[in-house]
Length: 133
Image (cartoon, rainbow, N blue to C red; front, side):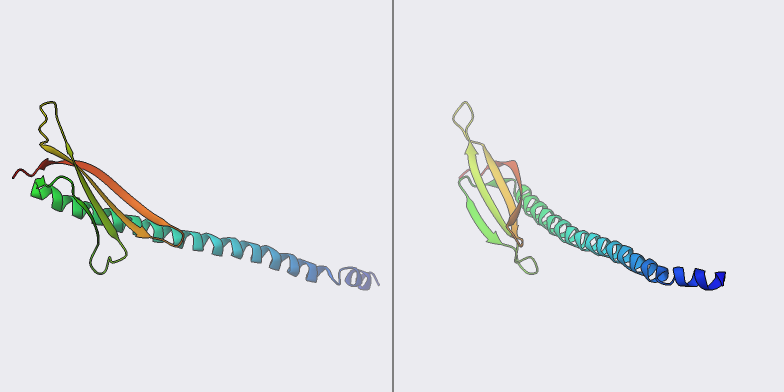
């Protein structure tokens, strides 16, 4: 008789245990899935910044190898395939010294690209010799 009493008192206990386990597992799996999605989107942002930085570095390397650049330039162009979403902007400004000669140009180069919500940009400033005519 004591055996029947124990069985009748614990009849729904297994169902409650299973429900609690399912709830805990579903919350845990949801958190893991959300973390995975955040990681994937972070990797996409890192990839875009790395590409933008590499394109900026290539453009700056090209300009520095010329040694001279004209003052007053304002360019905005897209990069060729497969980087057609990236644009670069180049602006130059002559820097006058005390004697009134402007042998240096301040060169501002930036690379920007669209994202879902806005545009991202990386920029750098350097100085190159003024092209004398």
